Image (tube, rainbow, N blue to C red):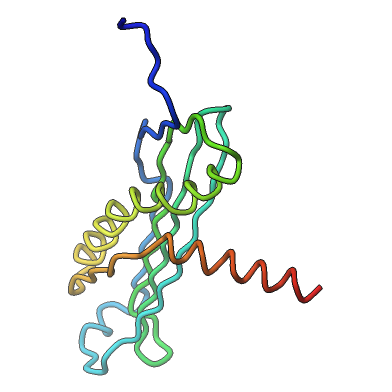
Length: 151
């Protein structure tokens, strides 16, 4: 029975790609002489775009800004994207998958790209720690619920 369709929800990766990538090191080469330890600021968010009923683009944006005092050492931003086939999920499940499972798949690609670009910029590697997107999603839900209760 080769014609039988798999039962239950399905999540499949169709394509993973870089949608946007930028790197700036405005104070080179002078910044290479600095001895002060830098401060790292990491910003992350994701966005879901529906391509059709079963196909969704998820974009994980990671921005890393490294500064020494007020001088920007470097700034790197990657928009790591993926096209996912998502079928058999409720609307609520789709939202959760777009905020958790898909970013979990995309994050290692974004981390590798960021590290590679930083090294090519002449700086020591920066290895981003793993992110628990499930915990981040739960925190966002809790914030939204707390905000709704205050109104």
